[in-house]
View (cartoon, helix red, strand yellow):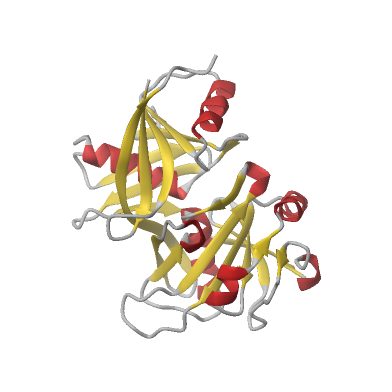
Length: 285
């Protein structure tokens, strides 16, 4: 069984978030997929197969179980297909547990995927968060809110990038809050306040210990939720550029584009990626 190790959302040919990618490997049992994902140890492993509803079917597994959608694993799977010469079009439809979504391959080689339009949920009081991070210094201009473009995330504004990078998470408390709020995890961000073209809109950290992901270097779905959150607050650059993974020494660049009128009509996330290696592994018995 061949497993491609792909870093999605890489920046200048390095960094990114690794995913295991299996192309057309028949593994019928979900428990075996979970065991394989756990043995690989990446935040997500994606299983790509044929579909009678779309161009491909994608299934996503963390070391603890299946999730309906994963942005960086989707980008990773199409990086593998691109590098293997298996992409003959510039637009594809994928079947996922979160629905049928589009994937685009740009002329510059960047890969973008469609996300669901956003849903906005509860605003969470600051008192609920003090046990999750030490020290905690929120950006009081903005609320802590649950947002979803496919997966529910707690979006948490932090006062400054240096505060974001130095705060220490309590993974047990984050898991408790995530489970209570029925969320994947907490996505923290700090605005960069830069007016330079192509500068990052914000730096981010993402925590999903409830699903076996203490922290990861790039999170497509969470950054889509963040872009929609910022748009609703009146922060509306031409495109949103997020950096993530500084604390993991794997800096990532995630690009989010919104189609808007009076409301958000469409969301897509994209970036680059590189194949880091190929593993041969037996199916977990």
